[in-house]
Length: 333
Ligand SMILES: Nc1ncnc2c1ncn2[C@@H]1O[C@H](COP(=O)(O)OP(=O)(O)OP(=O)(O)O)[C@@H](O)[C@H]1O
Figure 1 (cartoon, rainbow, N blue to C red):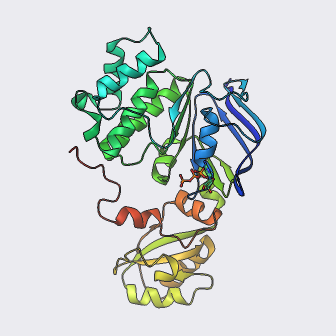
Figure 2 (figure 1 turned 30 degrees about the horizontal axis):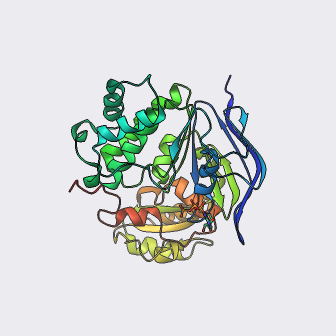
Figure 3 (figure 1 turned 30 degrees about the vertical axis):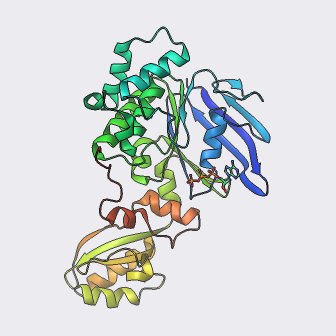
């Protein structure tokens, strides 16, 4: 039977006039990975900070690992993680950083072998003796995760751990988080990377202006949105574009996706309900235009997110990823 690692009810937190959290409920069972998504300023970091004991809620009830979180600040027992980047020492090497953290925690059960194992898990063995000062953002994120691993947490809280990760780094982090969850640790992480969240998370919560607008499995989120962006490749793009323009409720080209997204001249991008897309396919076939490919232009999770947060006209993550090097880890200097 799973038990709750986090149970939050009606959590509020304000900063002056700003309502960072306006009555948030959150349930995270042990052994699951829970993703927090939301536009900038939605309240993700504030919520993660409460779980880490960096601040307390104004009102509401918060239980972490079965114990009510008291007014006293401090990381609750069994919890590890970071918000706003891991706190590490730039002048020390990766190995020295972890050894220093173990010693600061007074954790006599941890040996130098445990430090090496943690470095290995996050893929930093080769740079274990390099100073942190020369590390890229992605490498620092991975070292922060290694530091959290050494605390053997039952709840791991990570603010945008995928920031700056290259594909190899992403694989390491996914593997570590999946292994932890399989061993019973609950993970709560924020991310702007929908692909990561869809691949990793058992559940996601979408925050918008301090309110929960969705919580549940990513596949349910994708299903919750009826509108979609679809890329259609046909034998006659020009004819297909004319036909699509006449389908009620269907938008095409840059009416369908933001102007920042480059359009493939050999494909048509349409936006509308499944029914409208069905109608397009029927009309294309009726006009003798064969459909060679038809698939989602924006990943379903991202499309649902944009629809639910009312930000459907913002540049999509797809657009961001299309910008050369946008998400790649910088080399070590
Ligand atoms: N210490 C603070 N003092 C004043 N305002 C704050 C403070 N911390 C957060 N806020 C405000 O609370 C709101 C929520 O911020 P928060 O950092 O939790 O959002 P977020 O979802 O993590 O955003 P991002 O994706 O940009 O990291 C924002 O309007 C922010 O400006």
